[in-house]
Image 1 (cartoon, rainbow, N blue to C red):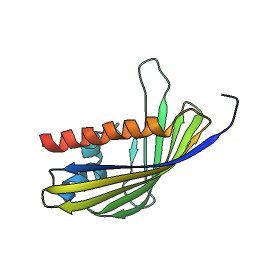
Image 2: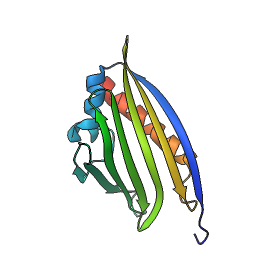
Image 3: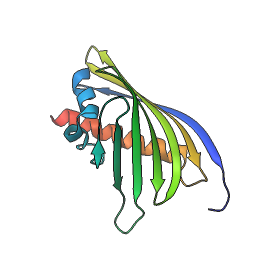
Length: 146
């Protein structure tokens, strides 16, 4: 693309899981647990200031690089991280994501909020929200099967 543009957007996704908040938090904070529902990390350092990096993509397609930095962690309650997403050598978005984990009578309410800058039309907020919903549904499937 030759034209430069930025589209800012925020989306919020809520999910309810029949699992304790501690299990939901572990699914985000432990590398082997997270790899069951999110692409396996090439680097996983879950601490404030730590990074998570993974690369991958479809066969014969572009390579995507997810590069996150953890900004705040409140065990079993909240995770805040910033991340960039690159397609090959092209930066396609920069985001701030917040994962809120709340105990309910039947398990856990997870509230995922992403505030993103989507760059030059390579990705859209709608595509990102759709993919994130699928990811959080996969997390639910994993929690249900354990």
